[in-house]
Structures are given as structure tokens and as C-alpha cells.
Image (cartoon, rainbow, N blue to C red; front, side, top):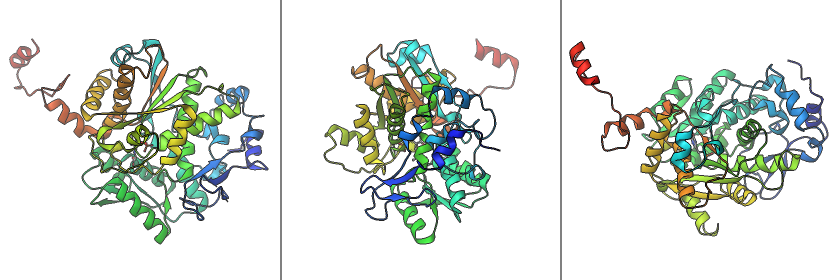
Length: 437
Ligand code: F0G
């Protein structure tokens, strides 16, 4: 399809996006694939020519763009193309990801201690493969296609591998995934091999799997699509762009997100920073609150000691998506908290599962890591960090069906709040009526 907008030409010409090392500042062309700086080994990020884009990316541009119904602008990621990646049309691998709902729910607002009209949940589980990862994956796989990758690879606690497998299948690129054996929810694991990815189970944690897949990609020419890939995070920024647009640019006080490898925390900080630079937001940015599971909380510990001493942990939690002990995006996530005056909180598995039962019971639903958002908001209002009148957006990161084992186990124990296990009954009317009464 023809690219109508003049403004896209700007991003592609003089003021083109660059990949830049956050450690030493070395630049790389966007049509090269690197997962770290070749000079100093630090993380890379995409930098957009914000000063140039500022004159063309404004509310009028956004209104025009929102009226474009055709590919790629019907995608909730590629609608923001100038702020995502300057790839040619023919390389885009998209399933119209994004465009997810922002829910209000008075019961959940009450549960977390907020006012019903100041609390929203954005459900990223509504993406094509059931998690926010699709927003990053459309960009990562499009880049892989542009650079001519032989195969794409990732380590995963299950959602990245599902998204990778699905988008690689759409693109017709072979995919390899490395997952911690026995620690990936079955919905995610089965989705990954069903889409056709080679799925390798590693006897070790996500962190070990990530280390190994990086080595494999370097040794055997694979294209790595974990969130060390700077293009992934550019797609994930659009969660924030879209949420603010849904709120008519009335910025909330808080944005709350679960943290594992800290890609979202990093991407959200960058999104807010860029929106302010472009004039879409005022000086005061919404504060980011990252929520970790108690058994997998290295970022929480690091935050608590004033970002002085980082210690990786041996991770454990029922929320397997965030069972991560050594987050690779640490420096970017720290920067995101510094930019936004953010905080980190931790919640127990019990708090996560209770919040999940409440979330599921409203019909919105989500996997355990998503429910960590709700549990975290509840804790932050209870301890006075979030004030009762604050406007809060919580991000639900994955779909309820991703982890059905966690649901079945929770509801099988009558001691759990709201336990609602299926009931077996004889197949006759009398027995059924007796039960219903
Ligand atoms: N929520 C869900 C549902 C996830 O799948 C993940 C990460 C996170 C939260 C944490 O996000 O890493 O940006 O801090 N899942 C990765 C995976 C690690 O492999 O699917 P983060």
C-alpha cells in the first residue's frame, strides 16, 4: 500500500532513526542487527529525531492517522510508525496488534482502594497471541525480515516464545525458542510449538536460557528477539501511546506494570520521555510503578537500596512469566524510574492469586503476572504511595487462558477466597435441582 503521509518521509530522510549504545554512544545503522554494543557490550536503543519530528507529529497528525483504516495504520503499533521504526512497508509483519481495551470496573477500583472513575486496566492480553509481546514482536520480526535473518530465536518464560513463533510463522522465517523446562505455563508452551517453532527446554531458569540463546545467536547467526533487541521495546512503547490517547491525553498519575526482564518498564519510560519531548505531555510525567513477585524481586531490592548494589536472585513465583532473577534491561529500567519518579513494589504469590481471582470474577481476567499489577496497586494504595484520588492505569500483560493450571489449582482448594471448582453431579434432574437449591 502507498505511504501517503509526508511526515514519514521526514523519518526516512535526513533525521533518520538510529540505533545508539546507551553506554558509549556508538551509532549503528537501523538495517543492522545487534543485541549489544560491539565496542562496550552495553544495551542498545533506538533514537528518533525528536527535534525534527516535533514539527510534524502533533494532535492534527494523530487525528489524521487515526482515520486511516488500511494497513499498516490499523495496527496499534504501526499507527505510531514514525516513533517506532523506519522500516519499508514490504517488510512489515503485522496482525493488527494493539488496539486493546481500557476497562473501568467499580468492584476492582474498590478492591484496590481507588475511585471508580480514576482507575483503568489496559488489557494487553487482547493481542493476537494473548500478550503484550505482540507489540514488540511485530517490530522485531519485521526487522528480522528487513535484515534477511536466516532464523529468529529467543529465550522465554512463554509469552515471548508464543509471540515469536506466531509472528515468525506469519513471516515464513524459521524460529527457535529456549524455555525453562517445567516452568512455562502449558498454554504458552503448546502455543509455541503449535505455531511451528523449534522448542528447546533448558534444565535451568529463564536467565540461563537467555544467556544460552545469546551465545547460540552469536555462534550460529541467529536473529535474537528478546527485549535486548532495541526494536522490541519500540513496539512496546505503543501501550503507553495508546493508553494516553484513550484517556484523551489527560495523563494519569500512575502507570503500573509487572516487571520481570524489565522491558516494559524501560519502554514505558522511553515512551513518556518522547511524548513530553514532542509536546504531547506536560513536564510532569505519570509515575511508573513496577511490580515484582516476592520470590523474583531483584529490581525491588535494588530500588530499596537506592540503586547502589544489584544482586541477581534465584527466582521463584507462581507467576512464571515474571520468574526472572537477572533482568537484562536493568539500566534502562532504572533510568525509566528516574525520569518518572517511579517506584518498585513486590507482592506475594498469595496476593497475586487473590487479585487474579478478583480480576477473573469481573469477566476481564488475566494470567497471574497480569494480576500482579492489581495486587501491586492494592499494596501501593494501602501503604499510602498511591493516594485514593490518584488516577491510575494498570497494565494487564497476559490473557486468562495462558495459564489454566494456575486457575485449576487455585479453585481446587476450598480454603482460597472465591474458590469455585467444578461440581460433579449425577446426570439426572432430581440430583441437579437438589444441587442448584
Ligand atoms: N507479564 C507477562 C504476562 C509476561 O509474559 C512478562 C514477560 C512480563 C509480565 C514481564 O515483562 O520482562 O518486560 O518486565 N515475559 C517474558 C517472556 C520474559 O519470555 O515471555 P518484562
